[in-house]
Amino acid sequence: MSPFRLQLFLFAWVVGWTMPLAAENEARLLLHARSRSEVQQKSGEFREVQQDLTWDPHKTALVVCDMWDQHWCRGASRRVAEMAPRMNEVIVAARNRGVLIVHCPSGCMDAYRETPQRALAQAAPRVETAIPLQAWCKLDAQHEGPLPIDDSDGGCDCWPPCPKGHPWTRQIAAIEIQPGDAVTDSAEAYYLMRQRGIENVIVMGVHANMCVLGRPFSIRQLVYQGQNVVLMRDMTDTMYNSRMSPQVTHVHGTQLVVEHIEKYWCPTVTSTDLTGKPAFQFAEASQPHVVFLISEPEYATEVTLPVFAREQLEPRGLRCTILTGEGPDFDTFPGIAALKTADLLLISVRRRALPNEQLQLVRDYLAAGKPLVGIRTACHAFHTRGKRESGHAEWQEFDPAVLGGNYTGHYGEGPQTKLSIAGGAGEHLILRGVKVEALLGNGSLYKVNPLAGTTQALLMGEIRDQPSEPIAWTNTYQGGRVFYTTLGHKEDFRNDEFNRLLVNGVFWALNRPVPEK
Image (cartoon, rainbow, N blue to C red; front, side):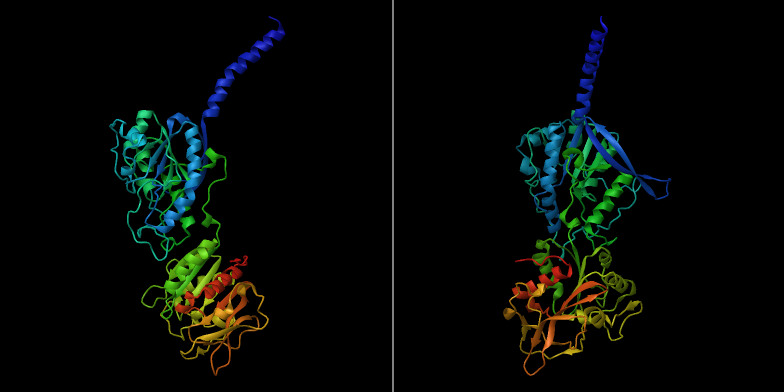
């Protein structure tokens, strides 16, 4: 054989041998997994570990955990609906690669009773296991530390909290169930995996601190049975109330639970490994965060402000945390650590002396040059006239120093206050779209003159036989924008023009474009 023919033969042999191997590698799933390893046994210190996993898709299942059509918690339902379209893209990509898709909407099997997907799961023969299969796998103190979040209240992050119940009827429609998929909510999932020779499992769905860990088809159960398990960390959520320990944002609470799973149970991956797209992120992760401090006995802002947040701010892309005063004197704010991640503070508080460390959080927030909006009694929010419990502090200078005001009392109850635009303020962004002629003050007129020289008056208020008083103005404190209005009576919130004014004030303080409509 000539040298040329020999080279040609060897080239053909090498290509012929490597092409099947390349095709096989192309077909396998490459997952970039993250886990956490304890630096030293019983040290409690963990380091992040990266590892590439290469799985045979035909020996892999993808479990969709409790992506219901409706949850008892409004916030949970909203996040499921937001995540579901991207999750469906992941499922389509996995299905196309040969991965078995197992849909597990717990408690909804009646909706799938006559479907082939339900029959597929039911037909899998039962198998004996070394570790008994469990209907629910509780926190395993022998295997894991305590959860890093307190979900003992059920985990609803809404305000007011949602009434509990079982409104789900099926899986959310945005996630398609196709021929060849399975539907179950029990240990049938494991039986089916054994029948199909499944060794690897990708878990996604909700909620990471509850069903994703505890259900009979999910992480703890499958790890006990020796399966190779990963959690898709950008395709999950938690039931966590940010007012509970450790008093971090909802997004951060989810991150803490993901880290817990990486420490004690299994690695995590992202949807990027299957879709090629950037990892999914809830909108609230990048939304400006508004924290409300509410504690006053006169104007029912514990009712009106949560409605304002839900109807006026959240639909405009702001994330809101509502904190109300608790304790005998309503002067303690569980969850006030949320100020550490707040982009704006809105205060409706009257004469409360906060615990020293809590008032210091308020001071630190404002000292950092972050924005503030105050309504009605906020001008004497922390002025208790020297009356305070041990370990509590007041801030008598808050009004003149931060708001730029000079509150000395108010006129008696009487006719509604007539409002007008202050001189030179007609073009101010906070007044954009506000029909001042339709805006009336329902509470007694506050005595606030004279304002600090750093302020700009926006609205003036007048009642018969009395000098006019500023009703709304802006100021700056440590470089941060401040908007304050003496409006905020319960009846004011029934007025569209007041709601518009307050929305404008929030967006102006955030230094974001004031909404056109």
